Length: 527
Image (cartoon, rainbow, N blue to C red; front, side, top):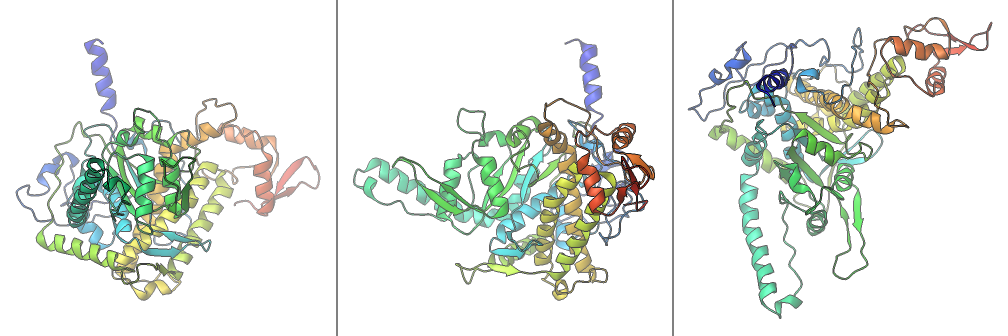
């Protein structure tokens, strides 16, 4: 490659940055305007947590509001682009969150905060393993969070290990002893013919190895029924089946874990065990974009809509990121939160702790209704598809925020418009998580899913949500006019327009034109 070509490629790669020109909430750093001055934000010699400063958020694309039932004055256009860089994705600004979250976020650079939040949710949900909540559809759900960190090499993915360690160092020490016991038993069976006949002792370990086969995942879940396992690895490639490019049953297991469903494995040989157990796995899985897309396969196995995806920004023009050690006071608070979450249901090992939240029910019911009305207006099917499970994940974030904020009785009221500051921060966390997860799924995985759903797999420009699509239709129109307007707005052609007109008829938006039965007539001017 010539020097000139190499320079051009370097110049192009340096354009990808998180956040672009949009303003974001600054949490965990003094009021420094220049992002490149991040090395002066905190004193690197101090182990104390830097002081928190929360700036006013301004983002015209995704605004975090206290009332999800209120639609924005003007919906914004979203366009899915394959291989979207972090710079091209309108990441929702971070509002004031539960104070415990903000204290931990302050240990890391601001541009990692969205990924820090998603990683914390996975960690906290892991420790609250006995907690269940009743979701909108009367489904009892676990606090399973599947976090995936996508970034090139040397992009600060190691922050996940630093964050995981400050929450799990005591558990890791205990499991190190258990792991030695398991290894001693294994060696004894190998070296002694008599010991080979002994039944293997089940050792309750909850931390999965960073390189583990699906068969070993099944075995570990069976030996630890009813509790979450944590799967953390800085390189997703280590989860591939030995000497293969396939991830085997792992995507299936993670989908079942998200739902808290039972998994079973039957074999026809005595050399393999038959397994039937509940899948409970939280993940912090890191990897490059290319390898992560390989894990997600063709985008139709359901994992894409259950995943909390995080794209880390480029670090090429940034000073080295600093991860700070918690102060003794903060470490004590982290340990107390871990103990509190682990204590949920600990007195009755065979029982679960199930909560019902009238406030969250009303909050997310209103938010999903807003999403439905938005879909009737825009016709953006992909954005609507990703809304369902992102709301479920946001609900889980709300439950986790509620648990670490003191379990306020306010959640027993349906009214979420007049709450305390602590409760508002919990609602902010729930809403931000919903918006962030939906946005990342849409921009990162949306093109892949849409391409897989196309009949002929012909690559077309994948276009997202368009402002006031129904509103822009004339008062009387032919069915074919829908595609004409879609083309003008840069949207892909729809082969079956009946799906769109039937939705509008059911919603009471249109009817057959009395003077020309081949035309449609608007009953309402807007959706």
